[in-house]
Each structure stands twice: as C-alpha cells, then as structure tokens.
Image 1 (cartoon, rainbow, N blue to C red):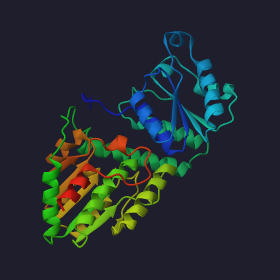
Image 2 (image 1 turned 180 degrees about the horizontal axis):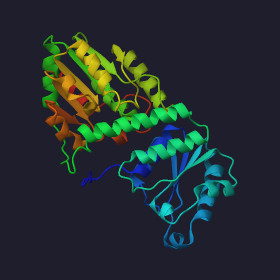
Image 3 (image 1 turned 90 degrees about the vertical axis):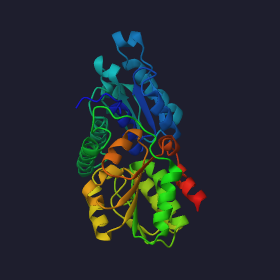
Amino acid sequence: MKYMHPRPSSIVAALYTARDLEVTVAVLHGPSGCSFKHARLLEEDGMRVLTTSLADQEFIFGGQKPLEAVLRYAEDTFEPKRMAVIGTCVSMIIGEDLHAAIQDSGIRTPTIAVDIHAGFPENIEGVIATLVAAADEGWISGEELERQKYLLGMANEVERLRGAASKSYIQPSRGDLKHVAAARLLELARSGKKGVAILNAKKETAYMFADELSALYEVCPDAPISYLVNLEDRGLPKVREDARRISEELRERGVPLRFCGALDEYGANGNALGGVITEIAPEFALIAGVPHAIPPESLEGIECISITNGPRQVEPLREQGHRYVVVEVDLHPRTLGVSRIVESEFGAVLRSMA
C-alpha cells in the first residue's frame, strides 16, 4: 500500500534501537538537519547524538574524513560505553563506507555501523539493520536477534490490519474528550461490574500509559477490576530496565498486577491478552498503549475505553467498536529520559473527578 500520510523513518528507528542497546553516542552521517527533532529528543533520554553535517562539497567528494574526526571527538569528549554510526540518505547515495571510517578513525570504543536510509516503506528496516550490526559485534545473541525480527513483523502486521497503516490516508484526531471518557469509566468501575485494565504499551511509552491504570486503582481500589500489564522481563537492556522500574512502582502504589507479555511484545501480545480477557469475561475494559493489537473478536460485548498516543489511531479503533478513544498527544516527549511513572492527562482528570 502507498501511504499518503507521513510514516515513521527507518533512520529514526535505527537511532531508537541504538539507544535500547545502551549506545551512549550515536553519530548521524549526513546533513545537520537530518532527523533533527528525534535526535534532540533522544538527547533528553541520555544518548548524545552528533552529526557529521555533510554539505554540498561532501556530497561530491565524500565525507569519510569528517566522520573519522567526529568519532575521535566523541570518544575524547564523552568517553562513551558504546557508539553507533547511523547512515542517512546522503551517505548511502554517495556510497560511504561506514565500517572503514570506524576502523581508520583509530577509536577504541565498541562501535557499530548501521547502513540505512529513509527510503524503505517500513521503518522496521532501521531496527533490523541496527540489531544485525549489534549481533555481528556480539552485543546481542542470535536468538535475541531472531526474536526481535519476529516481534517487529508482528507489530507491522497489526499496524497493517488494524492500525495507522491500514489505510492510505487516515485523518488525525484528538479523540474523545478526556472528562467524558473518565466519567464513564468511573461510572462503570463504581457499578460493581467486572472490569479489566490493560497496559499493552510500546517500550518507554509505558511510563505514562501505566499512570492510567494507577489512577483507576487509586480512585476505585475495591472495584472488581483485573490489571494486566506487559512488563515481563525480556528484551533489549533498556527495555528490561524500564519494565522493572514501572512494575516496581505500580506495586508500590498497591496495584495488583497480572503479567502478560513484555514491553517489546506489544504487537505480538494481542492473542495472549485476548485469551486472558476471555477467561476473565469482563463487562468493560480500559486499554492503554496499543489497543488495536487485541483482536476485535476478543472484545465483543465489552465496553472499551482505549487510550493511545497516535492521532491516526482514533478512526481505526472507533471502527473496531471501541466506545471511547482518548489520545495522549504529548506522551512521547514526556516519557523520554524518565525513570518514574509520568502523570497522564487522562489520569489527572480521573483523579480530579474522584
């Protein structure tokens, strides 16, 4: 399918994957403006992002020497644990040898080269390229590489079937008013009806999506609600640490957790969650993170209040029968560089109503 709304970039996906691999300095080999917004956000998450700032002269004569100089600067200045050189459209078009630049720079820091550009239809190509380079360097096992490839394929399939990639163009929406959805959730929770609250979040977004579950428990601690979370201990280093922190904080807040899946399994977790939902047989559900991963047939007859951070996910979720769809628009920038649960707008509204 040809998409007419913007889709995630494989270069940006490579940057985020490098971060999850505990890379502390990433070098974008391309123009200074390439992936600027995400590079800046990732620096808030503790990873330095440098650029070789390629310009018209390097477009013709090559940029290996500037790359070598930036790598030496990065090592001398930041003393990084690991580094990654991430390719861009420019460096790939002019045929830059990223591996040769790393070798010729004389640096001692473990460093991977990721040959990538933004011309792929699916952004997971950037993730896979980074993971393959990491496996070649022994940073992850071959088994974990294959696991990640499977999860990426499942996540892509969910997006194609029921997500933002299910149509050529989806109108972005801010979703339903938070106070309207919160009022209905409170009504359901206080009615004595059986409910389920689900966290099926993607990686660091769980730092805010978890707050929706926490808020519901705070205001209705005695309601017959089961709390399902994808916080099991699997995945790349940062992903596992995030899951540990969030689950510990939820326990500190008294939320009774039932684990189902890991933070990088959000796309492959739908059938497992569907099985647990069938077992519980709730009358209503709060689903935060990636609600569309759960097959619609598993939610038949259940009143669903779903929370996403994707404005283009509202329309597909409504078509799948979710009664309320709420969007946490500023979630992504607010969950970078944090180590504690971040209060959500929906959670704040829910608390204020109680």
